[in-house]
Length: 492
Image (cartoon, rainbow, N blue to C red):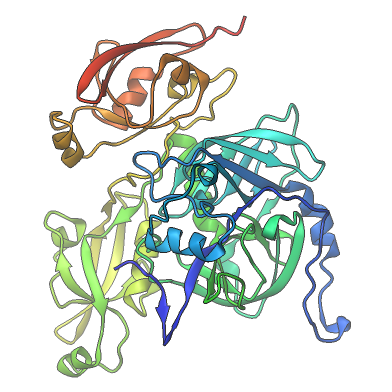
C-alpha cells in the first residue's frame, strides 16, 4: 500500500524537496535559535571547504510525461504549492495550461569526483528534457543523466568542465548515532548555498513508502525545504553521510522532521550505475508482516519483535532454503530484525547470489538457515544510458544518445509483439538519436541484423558503435515497423 501519509487526524505529507522556479540569490546562512554559542560546534570550516563542491541543479521540462517514468514532475503548478503537492502524491490531473506545461525545477547536488560526476535525487531530474548545474563560482554546465534509480531516488549526473572539479569527501553513514550534529548545504526556495544545521534524530527509519521500501532513512531536525533535494548532509568531520531527500509535513514546508538517504546506499547505486547502467537489489522471496498481539499470544512469544512470514515465493531462495509460512525472521546476516520494515533494506543491499544466514523462530525454537539471495526484477522506471555519460568520445548506446529500458511481456502483448521481443526507448539523450527521429516510447526490435529483447542484448549489440559509425535500427511505432539509420559524427 502506497503511503499517502495520513497521520493521526491531520493530513501530513512526505514532501520531496525539489522546487519550481529559477530564482537565484546570494549565499545565505539560515540561522536557527541556539543555546549559548560556546556549546555549539563551529561549522565555518566545513562550509568553506565543501561549498564549492555543492551545485544547484536546474531541470527543464516540456510538460510531457515520458513512457516508462513515474508520474509527473512536482513542479507542474509553480504558483500553487498545494496543487504541486497533490499532483506528486495523489496523481491529480489538474489540467495545466500550456503556459504551465513548460516549467523548471530546482534542486541541489554535489560533486563526488573531479571528472564531473554529480549525485542528486531522481525526483529532481525525473522526466527532464534538459539538466544544467550551477557551481559556486557561477559557471553553468550542461549535465547528462548517466543513470537513475527511482527505488533509491538516486540520479547520477556527469558534466565536463575542462579540468578537475572540487569534490566532497564521502563518509560512513553506518557510523551515525542519534544526537550527533549534522549540517546541510543546498538551495531551499532557490537561495543557493544556504547552510542549516541540526542533529540526527533517528537512524534506520523506514517510511512505509511503496516507492522506497529498500531505504532506511536518516531522520534529522535539520531545516530542509523545497530546493534542498539532492543536497549533501555532512557530519562534523566534513564528510557526506546522506542525501537530503524528504520532509514530513502537514503544510508542504519544514516542520522539524527531515529525511536523508544514507550515503552508503547512494554510493552502492553509483557504483552500479557507472559499471552497468542500472541498479540490482537482492530478493529473499518472502512476504512478511508484523508480529501482532494475537500472534504473540498464539506463539507464546516474549515480545512482538521480528517479521512473520506470510507468503513464500515459489522458486525463490527462501523456498529453496526451506522457509515456511509462520516462521518469524529474527535476524538477517547478523543484523537483528525488530520489525518487517527492517528486512527489505538489508536484503536490497545484498548482492544477488550471496549466501546469508537467516535466524528464524519456528515452533518455539530458534534456528539458523542459509539462504541464497536472488535478484529483484529491474526497476522499469530507471533510466539506463548504457553505463556511460553521453558526450564527446562516447561509444555504444551513449554515443547514439539513447536510454533504453526493459519491456515487460504485458506491454509487448498490447503492442502485438512477441514475448522477449524489443526494448523500450525511455529517453533520447543526444542529438544523434533525435536527428534520426527516434522518440521516447519507440520500441527497438533490431540493431543491424541482430534482434534485441533486453537491455543487456541492446548494450551488447551497440558496444562497438564509435565516432563515424552508422547503425540501422528496426523501430516499432504506432503499430508499424520502420528502419532508422543513426550516424555518429566522427568529430573531425
